[in-house]
Length: 323
Image (tube, rainbow, N blue to C red; front, side, top):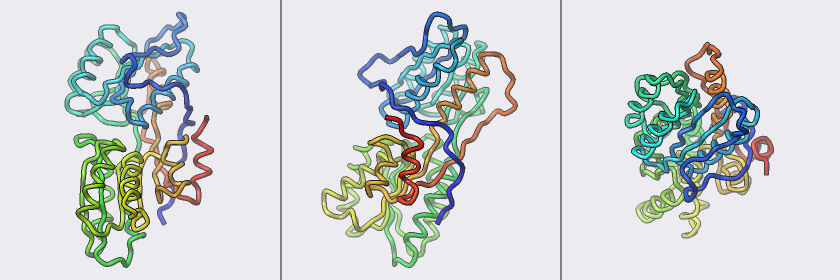
């Protein structure tokens, strides 16, 4: 069995969400006394993982009374995110936190912010050419390797197993690393057949892709999805045709709360998930230090993942869930 790596880096709070139907920008903790202005350009609040990032930052900013926070939501559109960052640059924040929708389109605008004297924190997804002051993220390659090992061990001895891989949005570093890490082990399974689809990180897209694959393959042994919503979508599709018990379902993110991946492990929907640190509290802490003019000794802060199975799911749920 894959060993648990690392420890939880932040407690997940469940507060009021930033819905896609709300304004693209929201202020948090602006009492009029704030000396420093931190802006957060979020790629897509519609993803549960990123919604939780926002909530954590909205909670954590209260710890820094000399700072105010503004969050924008690009709704998974790189052009929108670039435009929103242009508007933020005009407001002259001390620090700009960017969770890029895509690497290449967001790199020039990040450089523009730096050229304007704004400190840039890159959150969880990287930019090209290290165009940031600090990167705060998690080890996606290790997550992929852990997932691949888990699947390889569970399928050991099965003749010609079929594995479905539902990838996240193409062009994002987490998708690439979670794919490459897992395939190092999955591709070594004797006789394995891997069918890849792109689910864009969304549950409904994962369900649609799985519906097609269920018609294509008379038997499937494992589903590896790059996040929990896509894994759950695949499970729902299999359940609708009475085939959910023939395969294992593996996801990534390990969010708390009633709709998070940890709960799905407890309920038996997922066989395991991998805790992917939201990086939100740590990213905000770094941003505050930069805003205050503190010198940081690292250009990268990499947080470690952990495997969550039925054996430890309740413990993790209690750690990361506040409702």
